[in-house]
Length: 379
Image (cartoon, rainbow, N blue to C red):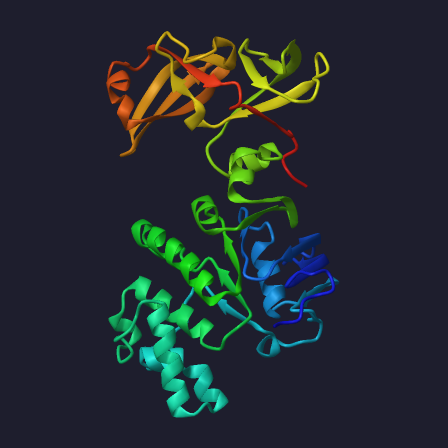
């Protein structure tokens, strides 16, 4: 049984700050008083735009960067002054950095060779690592004889062969094509479950974050702006920034009015009325922003299913219909030059095929679909 930190978390980051000097003689705050914990056997994804601090945070965990302020504890041990090779951590980078002159076996077992592990034990551990990443039988190949996805698996096997307690992954799937990237997302999560260790994964790709994570940490400007499960972050973003960054979003700014029975109406400056269910009372005239995800909009066929009071409507003008394979994306125009996006399942292709560019279109949505978000866009 491993020791746990005093907080009960396997990784405990407290009040982490890091400032870099710029070539222009100014300073850039990459981490701004950031605190985060990671539980044992948890897959946590750091998600955010370029420059938000996610890679810097990963590098401080690995020991490749030092904090200006704050502390990091891993498995109950303070990491200040502990060099990278003495931390219970390994890292998989976007650049796989395989030795071209070594075989797959040689690359994967390199750290064991340096440590003087006996050949029998070395070979067993290499075989186990290659089997785990799906490369059994490829040990004698050189990196140039492997596909990009296979090279990525070699880098992963090399990282896990030393039995780290924490694996850090810095956008390791970015160089792969879409189909292989989607396959590796599932396989990485399966490997994490089989290893039973914590993963901290860095990406700016929302699909990767939603697919693999136990929790998503959304970052902006060196700070954490929201932490939650994939469904929490997607369905209930705390801010307009998160709503825009994670998934497609339709945002409506306006004033609120209570209409009774737990229902609220938000009226925009362009005349749209967004009906939503809100537990708390909404003071008349309060300014707010409502989010409706495109997949929660349905083509209106004239009849509301069930109680009509549980549905709202939006009218727009069709600009473009795009077939995505399993869905149609309808891009529409709202008054004031704003856009509205809706996803219609392929089962509704007959309804979509009747729509012409420039035609009026009406959508319905359940009143549970809109959510109010903070208009703050970040630090």
